[in-house]
Length: 89
Image (cartoon, rainbow, N blue to C red; front, side, top):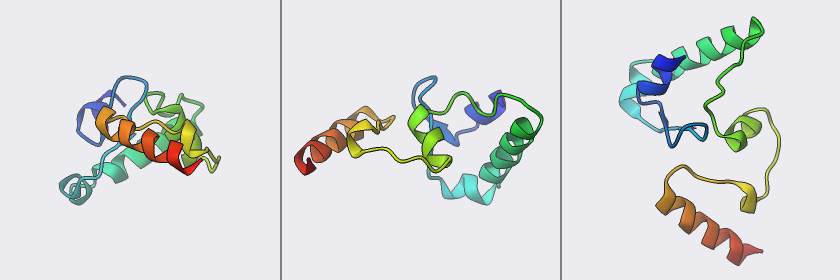
């Protein structure tokens, strides 16, 4: 799993990583490999991918968050996101 963290498909700080959007990594099937390894880990009782942010993990499981509860790994984008979400409330 550590190789997936360092291969570029995730960004952010430790314990709050989120998936990147990269066409070269998609073409190299890095996201597919990550999905397969994550599935294998969960099927065999492993920890899954404990480096993901809690919000991203829960969203992947189908849980819902309000806009105010979601944090974005990029601090500049997160600040703008929080400003926009506060205006919507």
